[in-house]
Amino acid sequence: KNFDSFAHPQLDDIASQTFDVPLANGYRADLSGWSHTRPRARGFLKSGAGTATAVVKGLTPAAKYIYQVYMVHEVSTWEGEAKISVNHGHNAHVEQSDLNWPVLQGVAEATSAGEITFEFERGTTDVHIDLSSIAIAKVGLAFVPK
Image (cartoon, rainbow, N blue to C red; front, side, top):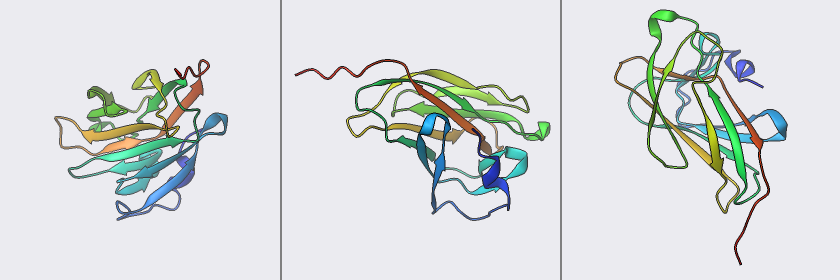
């Protein structure tokens, strides 16, 4: 499931708003800090400095989830580097492009609140960053030590 439906109509000046978006497998995420929605981004766009977030919620605490992050931009001259952290970990440096494939994938553990947090920032270029989709699925049972 992607965020195309949020790009129509195009929204501006939305950085102070939080959007509750559906994900595949019945999960939902709260997106905040994104400045616009655009069809060319296939969803949400962040221009300017600062951090935008996607908090996947309703997960089983301490369970592991496989994820894929998609950052598609259909204007090749605006492609560039972005930084993504998962659950406040180290920054992964990724390249967004016009190709519809994941720029980041991995496994993360849901917090005790049942959430996984993705944080996005611009990289070394001055282009904006896009968020087109997040795919997520549970990969194992939660282990909670007693």
